[in-house]
Image (cartoon, rainbow, N blue to C red; front, side, top):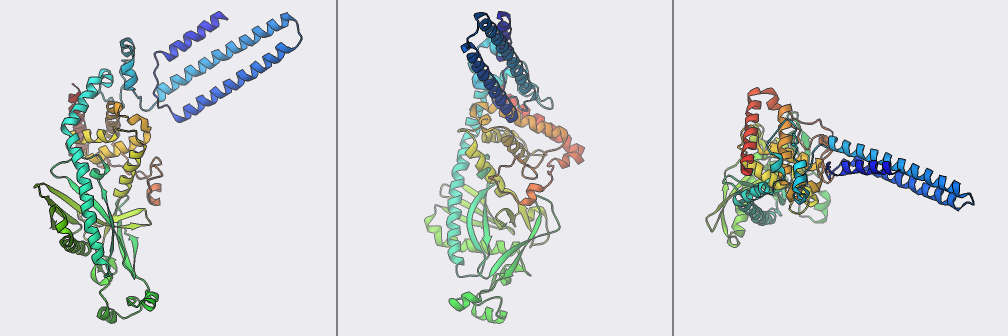
Length: 515
């Protein structure tokens, strides 16, 4: 009996001392371990009850002693078996864990001998060796990153956050004035603005070419309705669409209020004589909403609206030439200049979003073609993760550091953003605590390198079951096949080689910050 206990204690000591397992074990493994624990507790409780009942029966002392030793042997065997199960479970978790987390706080509080015992190098996927074990656990390395961030990024990041609020407030005032001007017209109604893109998602920093992009949704005026018709060109997530404008009956309002003439049931001559022109005759080509006409109309509205509120603002506004959006240059009294782009969009079924502002970039010839956009869903994803992440989460800092160090050519900030979005759903929120910054940077680079080796990086929102339910997606997005953002690399060997060189340069720049 003593030998069995010694063996059990020695085995548990070996298991619990040198083998450190991530706090973020697989959910299925956690459930399995919990079930095993409950079964063992239930077994021990039943044995204890049976033992108590046997001891109460009037039997000889010899029989009691035999029962005691038999029960003790059974308990010893059960404990030994439980130890084997625990050993197997811990070994399985250590070998199957996708991302071997390294808890820096526990590592720093350990003795130096333990750190030396745990210093065996963990190779990243694709044999990426950008952080040595000492750097992973070394507090000065983390402090070096934090110091660099404070010196080069903290100020610009704070400036972007402040500027976002200023721009949103100013554009909100402009839209309010535009809404007042459009009340008596039969032209599109302007919804409130919402900032989209990296600056409003929280991971950008101020640069000379920073553009603050805002989205304004268009709603049909009275007597009209919008119906999106998908075109034959384009694939998810950039399908082509056309906004079909239909006339709706207003006879009931005409009879009750007498303030309108029904576009649908009166002759066009009569309507034009007694009523302002409708949407079809001003902003449409045929029966479809025209992107260029709508953009020019909105720019005119913005100029007139600015005349109404200019005296209350602390800056000057200039509307810049643009055929598909409204680009503004804001010059503050201090002399600082900010560039803003207001993009117009039409929403379908409260999920799909089609924007006219992207048409010029796509090189499309038809001015009635609108392109589908994921900008709103991506913004909602980052807002959702901000609510789930711990205080001071490092996921935005990871993106800010890497995009600052990356020189865009083949690889871009979009690729880094996509990798980070995948990792945000693969790792639990607690993995993004500030003290895990080094580990998360390693994971981003490791994931990116693996994608480069396989020439495959999937779009986050297409055919991805891990997208949170709080981010509403069109049905076509949910059932779509994954889209490879590295398709070009798979088709062009030179581009793939260049991307690998850029990756090496990126990790070299990051490693130099830790030296």
